[in-house]
Amino acid sequence: MILNNATIRGDVILPNAGVTNFGGIVGNENLIPNSQINETSNRYGFGIRRLSQPLKSNTTYTLTLNGKSIPNGNTTKYLRCFLYDTNWKKSWSIELPETENTTKSITFTTGDVPLGTIYEIASYWYPSDGDRTGNATVNWYKLEEGDKSTPWCPAIGDKLNPVRFWAG
Image 1 (cartoon, helix red, strand yellow):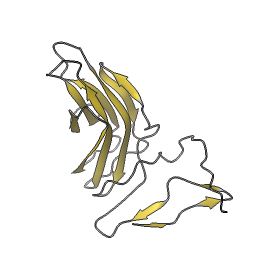
Image 2 (cartoon, rainbow, N blue to C red):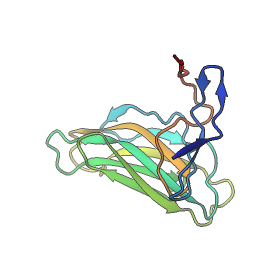
Image 3 (cartoon, one colour):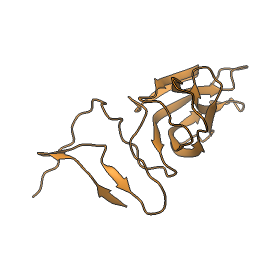
Image 4 (cartoon, rainbow, N blue to C red):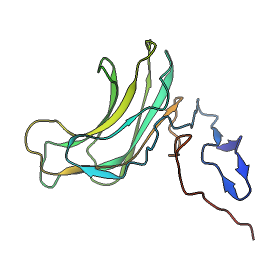
């Protein structure tokens, strides 16, 4: 992996540097603002975020989720994350039944995306019916253009504490 187009200002490196990986198409820009969720819940619908920009028609994206299921004896529920248009006409999902923090990704191609379509992402203690015992933890989401998952980074415009590097 080779970093390119990194923006360095003084002793701060900005987190959205482009990445080149010669094994496939890689985007690296996270399209989900405030994607460091760090939320545990047993609700049906939590960690909801609206994408920072519309999805493009006929474009490949990779959605990555990091989290875990905490069943507390409930054998029918698990963490499930949906990326969906707000009319629920099109959606993609990741199931995460693992009980230790796990990162999973899916790659999909959008097809035709009508102008003005709004997409959101949300997590669910799934399915919605039955016993609500247990919960799920979502640590972070990442949606990027391309067919490879790259390490989590904040969306452009997210407010973070700067990381400082010193030589010597």
